[in-house]
Length: 595
Image (cartoon, rainbow, N blue to C red; front, side, top):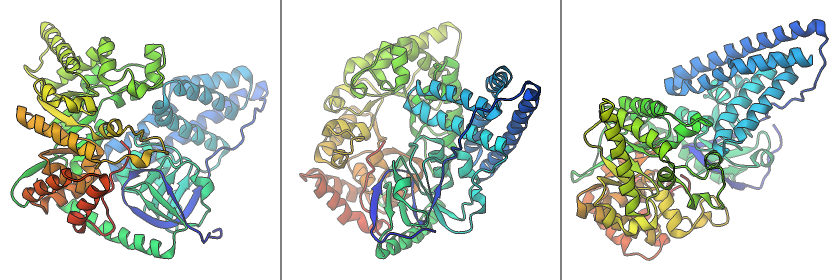
């Protein structure tokens, strides 16, 4: 171990797996060994190709081992992450092109593989940041595995760890993560990745506290240095003072005890002390996450982000059958619980620049979500037809995002009805009626909620964007991110107004933004009349637990008091003072400023 610095440092990234980790840093070097072009004599080309094929067989054996372990410890959904890598490894084009390169150019296998992989990565980079990040990491992991198999070397053998560590690395492959000795790995801090990276998804499934997207952390930390990782807030303390370290160590022990206790009661509904029920649903990106949602006690899916289907299949567009199969699978897993499908909400990605054949200066405010769908009816209709076919067996509702105008809702409903008639004319069974909702995530939609409520069956308030647009704060801009305040009076007044408009029209209202995952905010929202909350699955047990300890009358009183206050700070203090003692020690109202 290296020397430990005496001065502490606090760094912030993206918390993707909750929990607290306290331990010593274990720095992992990214495999990047130099690869040279080595000429191969003609009479040794066949031997070089044989060497490549043996390396591929060895890699396949390693991946199957990782898949089996993931299946055993995290379930089928997470084991499928390795199917993607197996598909890359067994891809006939990869094998054929590499073999041809060895034969044609008479070069070593290492050089041939690297050239082919670099070409694949270049193609992925043209599909957008998300595709390059999520699919590119699989390609790079397979590449590193092949190179090490060719060299006869070994990958990081994390299963042999003998002491408690926090892994710090630029990247960490899903297979490394599954194979690590979880009795010894307390947490993860990774420079790359995002909420939807495979590593983040598996870390969450394995309940390993993790912070990703913390650029430069590898150069900030020395091997053996003391670290504290808060996977909920995305905070990493480097060489923390002993008092802080002890405080988090104790909090970690208490949190684990509390989590075990909460999971024991996860099946119990969120019924308040005076008998009111608040339904807890899950926000999902992938159908495979449905199993985890059920394990955490979800009572339905309040938001399924269908754009991940588009990113998964890029550069191809999903077909009507792709939509049908995906939504049907999700509905079957959750049955008989309800599932809400959100129509496509993309537009700023390079992927869509290719479709539109142009770029936009400010795509977040540009042709995205329902605006894009109404412009590209061919793409929208495929999604609607696939949805209707899946909905024929029940359990599915539909909602449209980024609404700003009544006309958008009418046009979307008209498109849906047109698809329904087409399918009927083709002799395909479809529901007589679909529950149709609108996301309220722009100030314009909130301001005309009374008008929009007449056209839909339900509202779903998307607070992540509503806060951003209301406060004119770009969450991704570090210069202003601290001004992103979910409890700003302007935000609460809009949520209250939307809830009142829904109540007046007799339609239900759900809140699916990150606010719902904070127990104190959830109590405030329930007090405003919101009876359905949708959040990341791991947050459900704790929110349920808090709501069961309060009466609805108390939550009504709390919301009235909050709406009378003039600043986010005052409202945060109100929640903390009234309900903070019902949370674990050290937990404050802290809604993450990420979606």
